[in-house]
Length: 257
Image (cartoon, rainbow, N blue to C red; front, side, top):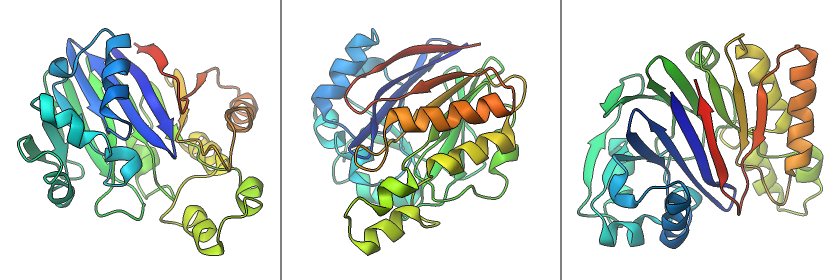
């Protein structure tokens, strides 16, 4: 069995806990160390119990809590070689393991396989987490669905998926033209419709849970994102449980079996 609890997810900060077989992992530290410790405590964990911290990329809403977190606790960090150059300044004493796309690493009871996504970062990753035959796909901060991604994730029992923006809200947001183009471009983020299209491309009978994530507080709402995905699930007659990760509240443990 795998478990996932999202401590925070939005354009303002991201951190997620994934557990299986007595191994506990953290994905990103894009909120304050205080909030991470509080979220872990609500999960029944401490930083010392985290076997590895996996990073998707170097943007501040995914890394900002690292420096303070690393002052008190020894961390095992898993990321690309390029990303490690950025993180060492914040956590010089951490133990780093470099990841390569498609090459899995075993951390305790959990096997983790990184894969490439399309985002304006140095070397951004998505992940597949596997424990005891149960698989969780983790896709965030990608402007498009990269070739091979639906096949890679076609057998997962749970999917953490970015559903960042509503196109109409983005266009009417008053943001600079360049920023709108960045968000909606191939190196930006997935819209609600793109997230729905991706689920259509990889859905299978064993997909139990979909967690909509990285929802923009300015250019989307959980209600809009949920409504779009629920309509998609209804259209394809698939009974997956649908969840929305929140910006300021922890999403309680979801058990995946």
